[in-house]
Amino acid sequence: GQNIDQPTEMTATEGAIVQINCTYQTSGFNGLFWYQQHAGEAPTFLSYNVLDGLEEKGRFSSFLSRSKGYSYLLLKELQMKDSASYLCAADARDDKIIFGKGTRLHILP
Amino acid sequence: NAGVMQNPRHLVRRRGQEARLRCSPMKGHSHVYWYRQLPEEGLKFMVYLQKENIIDESGMPKERFSAEFPKEGPSILRIQQVVRGDSAAYFCASSPPIGSTQYFGPGTRLTVL
Image (cartoon, one colour):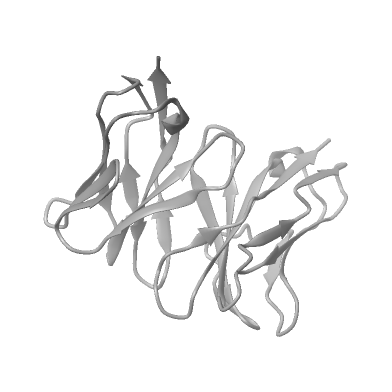
């Protein structure tokens, strides 16, 4: 079956670091997406990992381990505007992307 | 380069009416995807289309829902005889001929009274 697991909610403090984990099981796998979605808005693309390892992009980094079916999104120097849902999505076979339910991140001042 | 366009942004229908949701992909994108998102839920895949072809409709309910992506014009998601349970945000995404990254439109929020 196809399954994406990520925590439902997380809370962190402004200026801190937070790691959002994601595990996946899919029938095929090309890569792993992370999207950010603010309430009432469309998801926006953050990252796409194909190879194992860490990819850094400014304050956001994404990690992938294909052998473990595991990824995480790391957010540094948290800002209030980072309060949003973060969607983990597996790029499965046949151009289909399977989305997790999202992790709602609350940032406290 | 305009992003993915969807209209209307908000749509209110009474039970039994038809809802038509439109999506214009980004310029140069030939693949269109429709997703449904219920409050507090993740994005659920509905259908994947290329011009004049339905590639995968495994996420589409068997009845009342249909989708098309004609040679000219936007992709249309059509819901006939809407029911309250159809109330949701419907997002369209597009991707280029090569590459997996999908770019999302602003969504259409359907409310069924």
